[in-house]
Length: 462
Length: 63
Image (cartoon, rainbow over all chains, first blue to last red; front, top):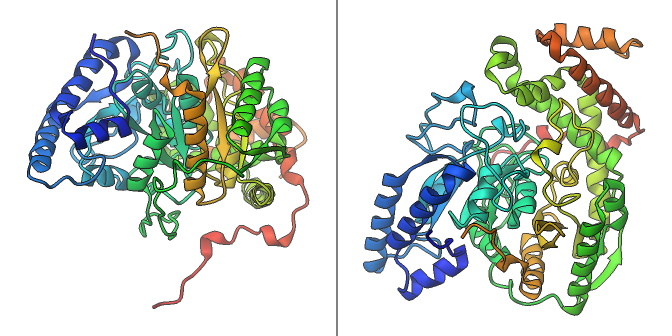
């Protein structure tokens, strides 16, 4: 068995020091994928020859003194809803098996321009909407901590590939938690940046006003390195924000003395967060205090209101995208995807408008909390990864993810490990920041991560 | 368009959208629809005029 790949920052430092070659790193990744992916199914397509060619080019450029930046020569992979020119984007669906992309997504183009090495396309819940056991044209990704448990979704392959050490960076998308849930269940870091911070152009949509593109990686620093390349205004993405991009790494190690963390305990209780996760969150608060932060209790908008916003908007916008296929080729979808998308038929125009109006209210309420603290801390998931047989795959979930509120509000959120449960499975917290305040969020996450050390644990894969 | 009878509303919405639910999945879909009806009641919260969703129409003057 080959060793797991180093994280983004570690690989970058080694390449800069000349102790690691992009070719060797790429071969290491391909060997790791060959060894593990037959059981974990993180990848839909491995672009081995393209990766080898890109790695050789990186070696030549770096040797010639033309290192493009800190990500040059490092492998990455994309959730298979991201376009790459010349490679099909399947969305893990029978409906898209022949869908050849003719242009790179903006995010793909940015990572390629930074000199990264594409390893392939990753498994997802169908159209970023279905469930983990749906019958689809490719196998569903398996949690590397325990293959009988949910890997999280919808960016399931992204979470699995990073956690299993196949790749240091994977891109996911997050409409109600689809970056943060796989990060939580797989024990890694997932960043949903502020709505508009990262272009969505060339990423197959699920819900126009809730979708966020973003990275999954091993550490907060790795996410900061990725965000540095990914962030920026895209005038052709109607949701893109024309805001300056700060240096996300400049202050990441500055510590958090004097920071104020808002602990959203009531929100977690209302969400049904279990006892071992609550204990891990309390311990995380203690660790933050130990680093010089103040922790205060804060209230958030009720789950009933935030769920009503997010679910109504998601149902209506997802249905608008899929209605024609749902009419004409319903049998081509997996059962879970089809039924969840069909639920959008029940949302009226007035309900959609009311949800958008209520969204403004709850976003303002979260803003008012963040006026009193630097970040809000709450659970990343209500428990460790559940068994696959316990996952609710009905048309309309009995309970909605603890992550979804912040898709409606658009605030940046980072999910990261905060301990391990009795079953040896990762537990997770979310840190919610001020709009476009990713640098502060990453600094807080980095400080906690270094103090707690959970990021160093890897799944028992050998 | 509140319709008192949920089953009638369920059938009308599917027919209007041109969708067909297989008979063996009708009960599960209907259960989901009932859960959605409960959730949507939350949207009736009185909202101030400042919440109008006008952001999508914001215009910029030519430069």
